Amino acid sequence: MTPEAARATFLKHIPDGADFIAANKDLGATDAAIDKELCRVADILQLAEEVARPLHDEVAKLTKRVAELEGKALTDGGIYRSELSYRPREVVTSGGQLWIARMNVLPGQKPGTVIGDEPPWRMLTKSYRPMPAKEAA
Image (cartoon, rainbow, N blue to C red; front, side):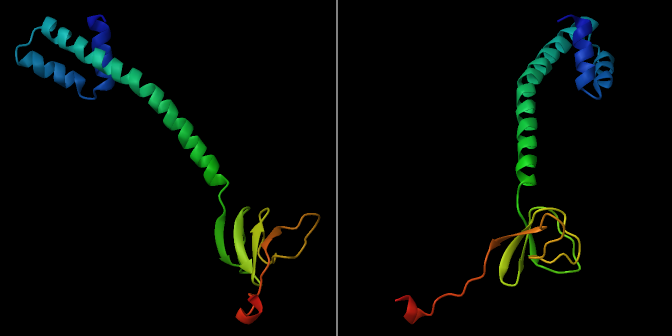
């Protein structure tokens, strides 16, 4: 790497790089000595960048995947309340049953009601009553 390229790399990555170079000159370092050290540092910076690039790309892929998976997650909406609106994949209980919103649900659209062609809610589980202990035996 040329001294000019090394200096450019150094200044690109080190915010106070110009101050560092000036301080070394003030301490009596020659331009040749500074350039030699900048070449070493620039080589290290370049190597670090080469190592970090694939890791950065992998982290970006994983970040995107996590966002996709979180977008598919169910959200606990608690007990249905008629004054609230609900988003798709939000799960509520109503009448002892578990319901999932299939689309954006406006306030007042109670689980089990059909509005238009598509019902806004889909039942996931019906309520059940456990059998008394003597009947189960």
